[in-house]
Length: 143
Image 1 (tube, rainbow, N blue to C red):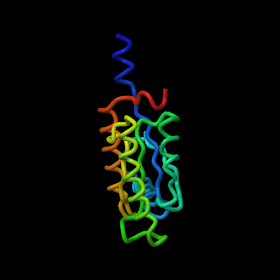
Image 2 (image 1 turned 30 degrees about the vertical axis):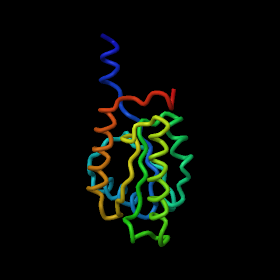
Image 3 (image 1 turned 180 degrees about the vertical axis):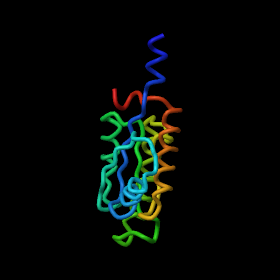
């Protein structure tokens, strides 16, 4: 009986690598607008998604993340001209590599959320948490 209770009490741990200029500002807007979203996501603010080293993502999974998010400026709207294009190309290939190593691709998320999209940020966090709960705890990378 305790095992069943432990499963229902489980909450996923999600790490989000986000752009300072857009997604982080969108998260800030969601907070100042008092929009509700799950507290499961821990954001790590970076100057640009183009600065993300894929090893950051691997380390997040190894450290106990059940899902990882990378989110930044919309294409053609990067404060560093093309950083989000570099991130998109690099991380699309990296997602395939993660899948090849046995990680369910549903555990890795990429999105483009601008500073004015607080509602989109909040609803996207809900979606990530809901979908990760369906997958259950990540086994093999972090234990």
